[in-house]
Image (tube, rainbow, N blue to C red):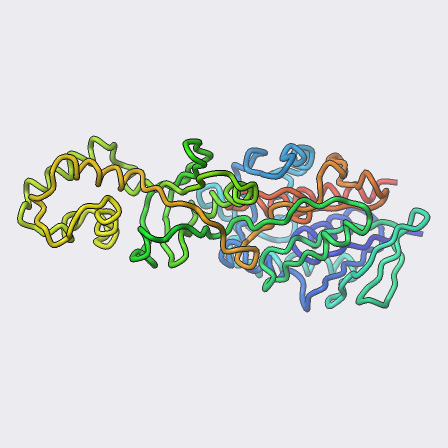
Length: 411
């Protein structure tokens, strides 16, 4: 009789694992999803366009206590295998700066392709079926669903994700099930999330977007720099560069690293000397212009005004001719190295991904099987692996799911 496999979680990794297992073997597969429908979070990825993967992904794009855990999965099921898998489901890819999307630019296309393939291959899918307990008994598993119903399985794959984005189905239930089987779970933290900062110098800028670079510092130590569109908010900072930095910032905040700050360079295309020369030229050419209009046409008016105030230059009603060399130098320093103390994040509710999860040391990276409970597997976000923004987390979902599915089918 064919083995029975239960997959807990109908998100990206769970659906992918179900398809791969059904394509490659004759196991009886039951996918259990606690929500009313599968793939709800998948529909929101890539702003609804589903950034399936990134052509340039590597181990360096991943975080956790042991990012090297990803290596075997990526070697066996990397970009080539991922693209072949989705092309086999009928998807055509479109690339933008290394990011790969379905050509429809609709996340629903990806979800539908996975759902249709599950149906075609005979995968049984049950929604509103929350696994409330797992017990390992004599090499098999007794699964309790919705508190009372019990189901036996030969092998179990937990693909339940993490508690990030609870409105899209995020939950810590997977971590609790893992702990019930003796696994240890690292703290679940928000990642790819907006950052809260001191707002004393940027409060007037809420809603303004600027192109620049953002660097994460703890004291004098710089951890990472990202470039792109930065959004000022009433609580702090957002935008792609900030979301990228949050992958590291969230852990530093948890560790209570000292003097955490985001440093902005709002003129990355100018050296300090070039920007100082520009500021001096503007003073010389428009000496009568009030300071509140000083950088008119150079940057957003409110950004310039906030920078002048942060550099303690003013009042803004003074003419540009009042600016001396020392004040101009201070302003340039403010625009090039605007240091904003970091105070927190907007939390798991707003996070796209969970950082932390099941300790990878307790799983075999060659198979995704538990080292503690034979026949029990895990993949995707429920493990202590999280990636940068830009398709990297979905690639981990696909690669780990494919490896787990292949391993479960081994005799």
